[in-house]
Structure formats: C-alpha cells, structure tokens
Image 1 (cartoon, rainbow, N blue to C red):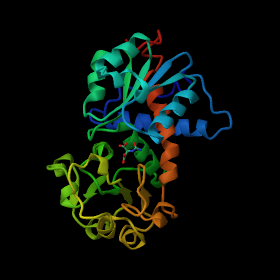
Image 2 (spheres, rainbow, N blue to C red):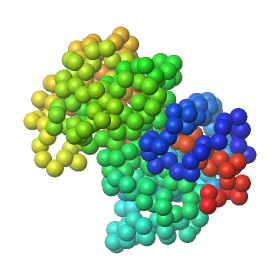
Image 3 (spheres, protein in one colour):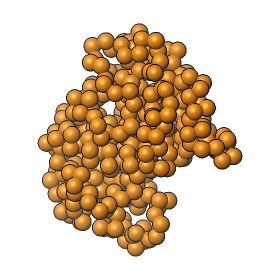
Length: 321
Ligand code: NCD
C-alpha cells in the first residue's frame, strides 16, 4: 500500500544523477521527503510501503553516514535490506563490477544502491540489471541524494531555494556533492557560487552555471547559504594546497569569514568534516550550523527516493522490469 497516493508519479526508474531531473521531479521528491520527515519523528517509524521489497546496498567506497542512511531509510519503509560488504566479497577475488551486479540481480532485488569510485558506475549498472538503481556517489561525478537532502534542508529553513545565493566552498575539483548541488540549485533557480583556490576548481565549472570566486571575502559576501566541502586528500595525486594550516587560514570557515555572509546564513557540510581544515569547530557546532539537520534530512530524502522509484502504480507486480 502506498501511504502517499496524493503524490504524482515520479517518471524515472532509476536515480543516477540530478542531471535529467526536471524542477517538477525535484519538487516532487522534496514534497515526499517532507512527509518522510514526519514519519521519522514519530515514535513508531515503520511504514509498510516497501514491505516485501528487497534493497541491496553495494558500497565499494568507505561510507558511514550514506550507507547507514540508506539502510535506515529502507527499514523505515519496511523493506528487507542487505548490505553487501565489498571488503569481504568476491570483489576481493577479482570479480568485475558487472559480474557482481548480475549475481545480485539474479537474487531479484527491487532496488540496488551503489557507491563506487568510478564516474558512470551507477549508469553502467542500470543498463545491466532489471531492478531500480540509486547512485549513492560515483567518483567525482554525482551524488544525487546528497544534493536533494541539502535542498530539503535549505527549503525547510528558508522556505524556498529559488533566488537564494548559495556559496559552495572548498574542494570543488573532487566533489560529486558540488556537481550535483550546482545542477540542482540551478534547476530550482538559486544563484550558485563556487569559492576555491584555482587548483581545486575543475576547468569550465562556470559553464555548469556557477559564478567563480577565488577568495572567501568575495564569495561569501551576500550569501544566504555557505556550504563547506571536505578537502578530499585521498583523491589528490599531488599537493594541490600548500599546507592544511595555510588552507584553513584562507579558505576555512571561521567566525570572521562567516560574518561576511548575510545575517542568518546557513552553514552546511555534507560530512565527514575535517575540523580545523575546512571548518572551525565553532562554526560546525554554532547556531547557524545545519549539519545535524542535513543528516536527519538524508534519511527522509532516501525514503522519498526509494518510495518514488518503487511506486506501486508503476510496478503493480512489485518488480521494476
Ligand atoms: C561526501 C561523499 O562521499 O561524496 N560525503 C557524503 O556522502 N556524506 C563528501 C565527502 O566525502 O567529502
């Protein structure tokens, strides 16, 4: 039984990225997520909309919050959730991504959630398997549920996303979170800025619809939302920043820099945070911080996405194929 028959049908089988979603699709997911927040705040959190469905989480990269968020989301919808631990699987014996996916697909899951270090991994799987696929982060490409949970957090705090000025700061180069957010925020009509040293900016980023700033002083002036990103040192081939101390001094968010943004600007971070590197503890734990709220919204957004993809009006037999 779908507990939200009032929501329009989501017109996609998979969620591979924000690219390809219309503003209407995005609003629909955010509206559904608002309903899921209400469910998560009840003492009885379990619903039955995905009862009998099987969800497999296939995480090839270390993850705490995203994997546990997808797991809880599935459980709150009543699905059976299995976490494939890649560390102890045949992947270690050299099995390819496609072979692993086809093996899992033969067990007839309804939804496969994948995180992988290669851009395009989720799209590749979606072509091979018969169930719905959700991209939980593919290399430096996209992380659609993160952008959706960020948008939900902003919408609930500010009443809207359109027309706000959002400054995304830090390691844009390696960030799938930044890419998905730039696409989503543009779709909803926000003014998007990226603030970073030029070594951490991908070439041509302005073509995605982001205004480029090389100093926090310029980039934060007039911002309604300050979104900090982790310095992804594990993805860096060489030294792209002189030193962590130097980086914090120029690009780390502290009280002084935050004062440049609009009054009441939201402070956001997708986590995991490097305190004292891209964000001062005082800002991460301060009154403007939305970081815990983002985590809460994460579960709701993942519930919304999985429920929308497995809408029984589209899959009366319970299978997506
Ligand atoms: C992000 C990711 O994995 O892309 N984290 C997350 O999903 N919560 C950002 C990061 O790793 O810095």
